Image 1 (cartoon, helix red, strand yellow):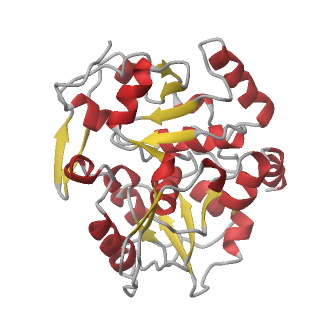
Image 2 (cartoon, one colour):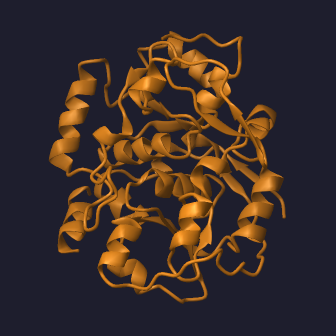
Length: 322
């Protein structure tokens, strides 16, 4: 666990619609201190009434084993295409308020610890989703459930106990997300934007088509394959310290290795001044994971295109490349 801690330190109601500023999300070491917590640190908070553990993996994996008292919010299913089309958000504010408060038992003062099996994308998806809607104290657990279990900390199986509902008032941080309109602008303005496709290469080339939720309980497979014109391929694994979900490994690569990834991206046009837009299939997962990695690297102007390929690939009016 010392290695994990060292890595983190080295990386060093009414609905409120806030424009915010990029400065709200710290970068580098300050990002790590605010948004990443060690397994030991998380274990110290287990059982405290003001703390909620949220498991971002699939319901099947959650039933197999999870941290006692945790609730499940599969990151891939936090994005609803009908809401993206309606309000430009993964969930429209009223639905999000009911889900976060009613289903997850989180209010605006809850300390939330988001985790997954250790790989990182699903933990980042939950983290980004909750932070987007105004949960101020939400952290990703470094090392994930794999490290938690390896240290001998308790786990349980089953569906888990439904938490008591709480009132949650969304305070949406619009500044950390991009809409399809901004992405269309970014395609034409390469002097100020840099688009990162964080999916697998088979998705980038259009050979693999994934599904996502159009509405609760209704999965649809994306109609078109390919990528956003001009988007640079940078699979999330390039930034990951633990893509296989093994115990005692950090979420993100060490800074020295991350900087090598950035060095290659700079050859393709990335500069610190540009606004970086990341995307995957639903935004909440691989896209949010790379958003976090870019923040750790010190990039200030970073956004997640929350519609991602699910919106883009299902809209015949939007341009694509293969």
